Image 1 (cartoon, one colour):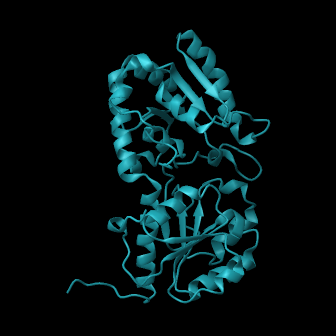
Image 2 (spheres, one colour):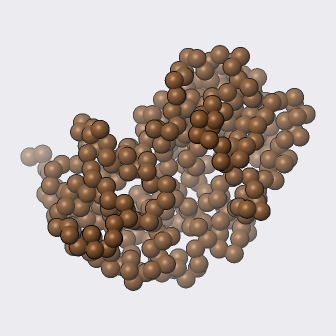
Image 3 (tube, helix red, strand yellow):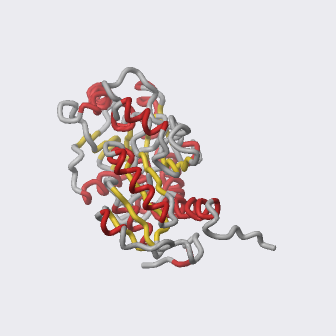
Length: 344
């Protein structure tokens, strides 16, 4: 459904968004479509030749795919620019950049592959392009939502089956980037048992309905360690963890659940810390925060409800689409493709 009232762009700057090589892109596609845009996902190069100047508003591409074919990437950028649109790289794995080889990172920083660098973390973000867009993850609201529950109904503590839960990848043999997470879980389980707390740690293949149910029947939903923290070329060697927030940091509140996360610098940009966001610094602090939020259920629910309202108001993928479209408007004004309104 087109939400024309939210459309942040005027007529004349293009109605087609081209997306190339980006995984898990469906929610952003829906966001653009809600705003009335036509989205082309992974079109053949020959299809781009059919387009005329002014039809495209932007091209979003995956930094980790395109840099493996640098000359092809530059050719696509040139084609998109000729159509009057910016070529935007979206990096959702900073600062480790999917373990990209050092020479490819060097190339990205020394050749003009992009008109803007969009990223979920501002770490290592100022060297890829003159224009940088802070573009955090968001909630896929069609999947993660209250699902028939209400914030009021979630205040009933008797419906909670677990004090602490987490579902996601916890298999360092299959997923080496989860080694720290697996060690954390192995240490956490006996500590929770000693505290006589109910817990659940599940596989990342948990069905969607079961995920939402688990979120809504767990007093505390944990978030700790992410692939973007440690997935460096040559392995992890003590580099700082990502400032960026994983998708679960938005999905859990969208379902009405309470999130307790490891520290993330960008939480200060996306939430009001303490009233909408709760975090821990280390293992001992995690246990202390778990005990506090289990014992102070009313406080915990107030934070969960405030976070839910924040996510639904500012952190859906339609909001990310809007932000990208506002940048495209600026870029086209900067290039002299459309007029800059002066209001005079």
